[in-house]
Image (cartoon, rainbow over all chains, first blue to last red; front, top):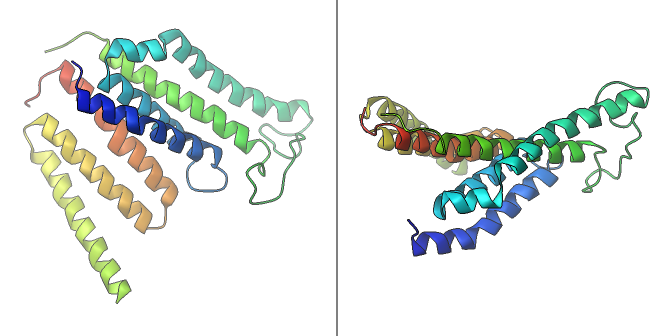
Length: 143
Length: 83
């Protein structure tokens, strides 16, 4: 079932939703938000796309294999960034002691690795929501 | 004057919140209950912002009003609509 008004509205507002999600993730250390809310917004935008068009088209955009890969990759990236501090001779998830440069406070690149960790958390959360939704939708119907 | 108006606004939101919570518990139509719960979440997000917790407000608006309602609606479409 495809509705013309619904698909046109979704096609118009979807880029703005996604850019808002990316903005929240990237500015996680400067403004409210961070990896989790931004990832949730991006995941919700993909769910909205799959609901407004059809489910087959939605799972063509992000297949199950891609979603699983992104989910595991986000968790692995977070852990690997944490172990970088251990390899540099400091604690797990240490920031400046692991050699990440701290820029001028207030700039976009001013937090060392918090920036990278927010991106990994965002990828993980977004793909988790997409996987959750598709697994629920494609399951069996109960009455 | 502004402080009084802000207080009236906050009390109105709190009353709406309590009414929404009672209505969710009493509604027999599950789809209606999900929609009321989404509006509850949206008002809760505004209240978090009024309590100077914008981080929680962003999360509440994205998770509570967005993703949770969608997952509930999917579950309702898999099962029955009336309780």
